[in-house]
Length: 394
Image 1: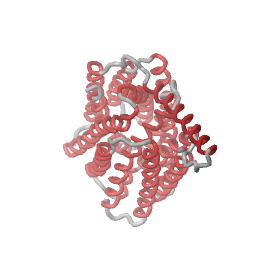
Image 2 (image 1 turned 180 degrees about the vertical axis):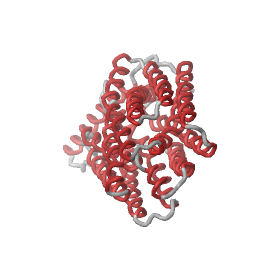
Image 3 (image 1 turned 90 degrees about the vertical axis):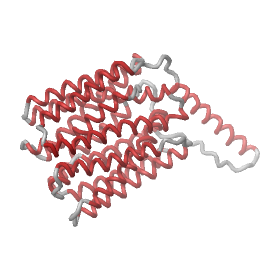
Image 4 (image 1 turned 120 degrees about the horizontal axis):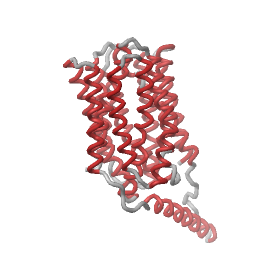
């Protein structure tokens, strides 16, 4: 029940994710304005992620930062209803991003501390399945809002109200864990396991036996590079995508929401299917496979863009991308919480923000300057680089 607030929060941002880019274009903005807004927001969120992660680990208080995130998001979304100035909208959205990320590091730590390491994949998958179901409902809500012709201010107030509901739910249902020790135990176990493998190799060498046991330690720097490039590829592709579907393929706002509903539905399915227990090696192999799959799908989008006549292949590819992302995210969250040192809970979100910020600006810029086929090809190449870094680090 403690996750209910996150469900309402994701509903709000699922609705907002398609509404806001289209709204900016409809009131006279450009693709570059959309890219600038997304890029500035994610750039500001990078240091904020470090700060929120450090504060929650330092104080060992997690609920307060989640409440700050939800209440501030509600307030700033409400303030968006009072202006149509694009510069002001960008500034308010950027400010909201700083407080929006306040709930991410505490949420990751809470899941790790509420459940043992053996259940992290299942717990992350369960959480992501619930919240992405909220995101999906937000997108479906956007379909009906566009059909009913609600005013933009009404849509923004709905998003604000959902965040207020998230704040109230978390206020009464969420509590900090009484003891914080699970991540420390995991790091101790990793040290013991490495020592055990070293002794095993030495023993076999001394007795003349082959030594198939691997003593190579994970490379955190390369793993972090993989996180950045994957986030960059995703942001490059998805930031200008609503405009491509609306302008290039001629889809109505309702159909744009529908395509994203399919993408999110695939993600929800993926989260609920990926909750089984995996060994560390199985987790690493799954991560590498799904990143490679996303690369191939992005290149397919580039190929279809050359003779784009129907939205069906795009919708199908985006469905598969949503499913692959769910598998990726559960694996990468579990691995990151094991590899990232204590006191740096915000590093994961900061790295994702760094890649997302670069992609959020580059995607719309490349789309407007060179065309969408170059956007999808750039995304595919970045996914391929992410695969190489993950392969080398794990």
